[in-house]
Length: 181
Image 1 (spheres, rainbow, N blue to C red):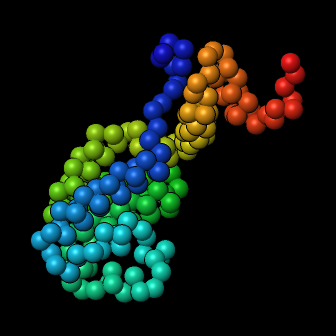
Image 2 (cartoon, rainbow, N blue to C red):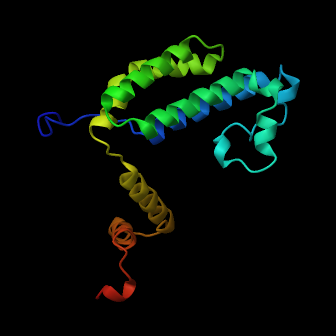
């Protein structure tokens, strides 16, 4: 493959980086909820950004007993990661911010965040490549979703060509009135 695309680079976009951070926050929340009574029944409080929470949820999240928790620190780390991806103008800024964030994660107590910092360190170049070339594969993932749905709808067709035709019709946004016999 490298012979055909010598300048190709692997890029990990912000969506997928934050997705892994959300999973780490969820693991930290689950691990701490059993041992910290004020955190019981707060599973859905931590995944969102504080600015997107509706009343009275921000006040619950700001409770001092909850703010000192490992889950709150993990949530703060995830929000800092989002800020790095939103505010960094170039690779240098993103690299400095992510290095400081990785240090914070490695010296923190939530184990899932330490594991995430190690994962970020291993894939550092691929994550930072996004700031050189801000491309995502969102279009491909969207098309794949449409194709998988078309394949599900075409179950029972006796001929694979008919499944292919269904995929072309669906992805091409063609109506059946444009198809001639």
